[in-house]
Amino acid sequence: MIKVNNLVKKFGDFVAVDNISFEVNKGEIFAFLGPNGAGKSTTIKILTTLVQPTSGTVIVNGFDPVRSPDETRRSFGIVFQDPSLDDDLTAWENMEFHGVLYDVPKKIRRERIEQLLKFVELWDRKDSLVKEFSGGMKRRLEVARGLLHHPKIIFLDEPTLGLDPQTRNHMWTYLKDLNKNEGTTIFFTTHYMEEAARIAERIAIIDHGKIITIGTAEELKEQTQTDSLEDAFLALTGKTIREENVSGVDQMRSARRRWQR
Amino acid sequence: MIGSLAQPLLFLVALGYGFGSVFQKAGEGNYLNFLVPGIIGMSIIFTAIFSGMEVIWDRQFGFLKETLIAPMSRLNIMIGRTLGGATVATMQGTIVMLISFFFGFHPISWFAIIPAILIMFLIALLFTALGTMVASLLNDMQGFQLIVNFLVMPLFFLSGSLFPLQGLPTALAIVARIDPLSYGIDALRTLLINTSHYGLVVDIVALGAITLLFLGLGSYFFKKIQI
Image (tube, rainbow over all chains, first blue to last red; front, side, top):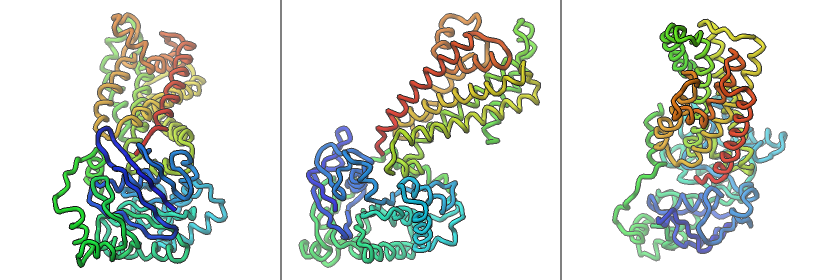
């Protein structure tokens, strides 16, 4: 479903993604696990046509994101780290808009919106403005929205960052059901160990733009002779705290947090 | 909306009544009438540029990101956004004009209002496209302050919004000629109070050409947005 070969992405002199290669099978639940600044978000952005690679090949559902962006976009749904909903519209209107953008025919659209909003338990709030929603509700709405056009893959970039355990649990229950019943491939990034261990079938550990290793949680623990994924991770990536440069986006994010509520 | 009306109206009242008698004595006539098109231009340029600039914020945290990732042509998104922003800015300008009637503004003919609104829309389109273009090039809000102070303010103040363009020192006259807003304000003045500096035809041609240029450049840079 996803094939990446020798992918490199440089921003000026900074190498965000350093020659990575991996494959994700159809219907798999795959996780990118790594510390902040490892290159997880950049990789997802390349897979989802938002950023162009410096070199390397990427195939998503048989399409090249650079050469066939629109077909690639129809193949996936995505839940970003930062919400991308229109706060001034209602939940229903946000879903409807997405359906129109992705050319979902009207009758099917209406049926699916109802089905998905009920799936994420937001049907009773369908006519409420999104600005009134909590972080967890917004995330659930984004999951529902990302699935509206029945994509083959759903990408999630740090999906449970900032959510409480109940919401996290709910979200993963929906997604695992979806994976089991519809065979939707799930690709997510996280730096939460237990999330990766509990949810993902295979995990790629990424650090400093390089993939250190790929395997199931069991394989990784065996490989490093450790008892928990967290220990395996630390063994593979070392214990030094990552030096991070605060990007413009991070500054905007903290400004946004300050101005909300 | 109410908040953003405060500044133009403040300018109108303070400068209009403040300088009124001086202007009259200098033989230029009614300052309030002269000023209103300038103030309308002020509300349009600020609203338009800001709505274009919203692209910076929106593409990270807003709905724009959803549209950028949808299987939809970037050009269509840009056109939609620009038209939307221009419409809001035009409405602002129209409201300022309506309120100025209460302050004693008298256009020479009520029929002039419709063409005036069309000119306002053209100005709004120009500056929304410019704002979108600038925002497509910037990566975060840091540049925003710079843009406001070094781009928008000069464009506004040196466009003849607040003072007549006749008899300006050469340097200022040249700057005013380059400033697209000058043509916009002049067109509004020609329609509303029949005072023209460049001539209506020149104004419309200049506005039209520059608008097309900015729309083109704006879409080019908008297409290149990477998040």
